[in-house]
Amino acid sequence: MDIQLLLLTIVVSFILAVIAAPLLIPLLRRMKFGQQVRDDGPQSHLKKIGTPTMGGIVILLAFTLTFLKFSAIKNTDFYVLLVATLGFGLIGFLDDYIKIVFKRSLGLTARQKLFGQLLFGAIMCWLLISNDHSTAIGIPGTSWSFDWSGWFYYPFIIIMMLAISNAVNFTDGLDGLLSGTSAIAFAAYAIVAIQATSLPAAVCAAAMIGAVLGFLVYNAHPAKVFMGDTGSLGIGGAIGAIAIVTKSEILFLIIGGVFVIEMLSVVLQVASFKTRGKRIFKMSPIHHHFELSGWSEWRVVITFWAVGLLLAGLGLYLNKGL
Image (cartoon, rainbow, N blue to C red; front, side, top):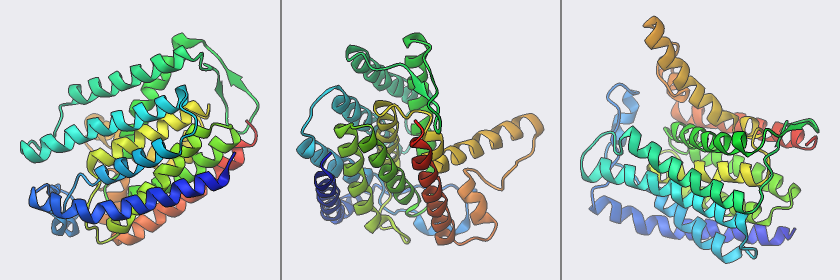
């Protein structure tokens, strides 16, 4: 596989994002596309009210241009990756747009968002079925796999896409947190894609690395722009699709361990409060718990980046056994 092509993809995507962001930020300000902040959250977040959001448009734009330009192979995997990233990104865009323009704090309803995710998940399945995609699922760190046929596999990957996109969405809550952790995850998956000899997946990962790092230039603390659901759901769609086309579905639990932890913290918090009337964490997702425990925002972000890096390394180590 051409490593120079992947490096060029990263660089071009990064440059596009760095150029696009300062052009979009003033536009978002003029359109008053400002961030809403939870009243029950850390008090330090109140100063973020009004910071432009929907900056995920920059990520998706830089990704799309570079992915289309440097993808020499336009096969089924290519279209699965494109549908997942832009499809889930579109759901996020509609959610952000409704929140801001129509002043609805929740944006799309849960049913509307679920319908959109199921729709694009179904399109992915249709593409994969048409290409006789393997329905076997490998166990990381071993040579074992199991295949319960398409009746199990395709519902599984739809649920997987729902879970991953929402887990990544939960992680977007602090300046630079998701930009940094997703860049690490995409870097790991770029290596997985190289090992799986999937050029479209490798180029997709490379394009996203450049896009999120370019966005991080403006999203690092103190953030000048937030990505919103436009970016977080698009990122989640891309990560999930890469895991599927490279046949490393279960490996996401390790490489994307930070996202898994964030989602579990929300699930456990809600379950505990509904069953016992008590909260486990001061606030969920868990990054807010550490903030309310006295950690600075930057300390939380750096710590989560470090954890993400360790988990990505562990995932790559285990992937050698696949």
